[in-house]
Length: 484
Ligand SMILES: *[C@@H]1O[C@H](CO)[C@@H](O)[C@H](O)[C@H]1NC(C)=O
Ligand SMILES: *[C@@H]1O[C@H](CO)[C@@H](O)[C@H](O)[C@H]1NC(C)=O
Ligand SMILES: *[C@@H]1O[C@H](CO)[C@@H](O)[C@H](O)[C@H]1NC(C)=O
Ligand SMILES: *[C@@H]1O[C@H](CO)[C@@H](O)[C@H](O)[C@H]1NC(C)=O
Image (cartoon, rainbow, N blue to C red; front, side, top):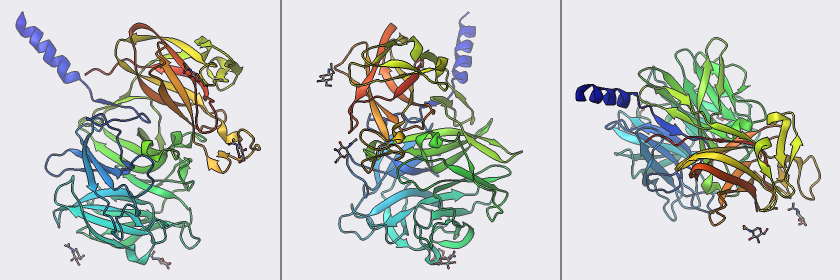
């Protein structure tokens, strides 16, 4: 009898799928610290095959010059910090704590047998628009500064990199700044040892895009870029071509209009060629300009239709990704609509054609005007996604209408709600609710400690620099714990 039981256990073990990716959550590394690597890029270690993610490190309160941090992972979900791969050096012309060290990308050079890190190198005024190069023998670094140069004599601002999996050639992608003589995006080929840009393959003239990335399918190249709205998200576009030299298609939105690409900016993408499926991931930045250091990473699967040349970045609160097979699947949760919630104080249900059951909960404010849900828990930390509408782009407080997103000259990107589990007001969880558009509902996840059985989740408003308004709430979705 024992033998068949062992066989069953093994069979189940081989069915265990990948790891959960939770876009827009507060990601933590294996030490429990915030995953602090923005506008980054992936590179695979030549020896171990492990993924390494490089990104801008931002200390609390810091905007520029934090250096480049590096994390490693086998599954793209569990990340181990290796500290700073490129450390800022006081007084250095290009990598001082005052320098712009943005959008790092690392590529392995077979000729130099080193890892080459490229980035947008600049002074604090963005007046130079150069490309930085640093190299290292080991993927995690430390990287040694080599140069800051103009590619073929041209300006280079937002930086991206792409390697063609068919030809093996690598390309630098860069917008050339905001001046009228610029406003283009270059796709330029690196020389064979990856020490300099060698020729311009294509230039997207005068679209005035930035944050470029390219992904490749069997048949197509797709270039994704954002419009230029600083740290405020906009509708990211893609263009398609059979060849990098073009002709390229007209730009088109990659996600539903007005979602501003789920409040993100493009910057990187990745092709997972699994044993069963090829999957492409969109890897964007969900900026928080009031606290850049805790901006979130939003990685989402991309759906491509080769027949009509379309590409979609599709939202999932949580999906399970297996980097070995390339398969992924969305996780299903249990939905509790605001109509089923208990409202307190001045919070009320308002008619809304776009809301669940034609209503949305509004008037959430401070700790008196709240909405409370009763949800089932498993006695573990569980993800809950909060679906909200935040219409601050209408103008706010004493501001006239028609000043999109602007409060007294400061762009406000979020409201903050308080989330209290089972009345535990000593442990108030903060929920950042990005500006949406009027009539657009987006979600933000929190990992919350639930009891087994019945729990209460109470949502109020916290101070966001202006007042204590929480965003309008449509529903919450409670997910079962991830199997370990
Ligand atoms: C570089 O920029 C100059 C304008 O400053 C332009 O004339 C030239 O064509 C650009 N070079 C390339 C290779 O695109
Ligand atoms: C890289 O190749 C270029 C020629 O394309 C050469 O001039 C340069 O010395 C090489 N650099 C290294 C570090 O191999
Ligand atoms: C409720 O909010 C008020 C200020 O608006 C604050 O003084 C009070 O401490 C809060 N109570 C709780 C239980 O958080
Ligand atoms: C806008 O600025 C004015 C004048 O400084 C101030 O009185 C007002 O409270 C501000 N409004 C908001 C919404 O911050």
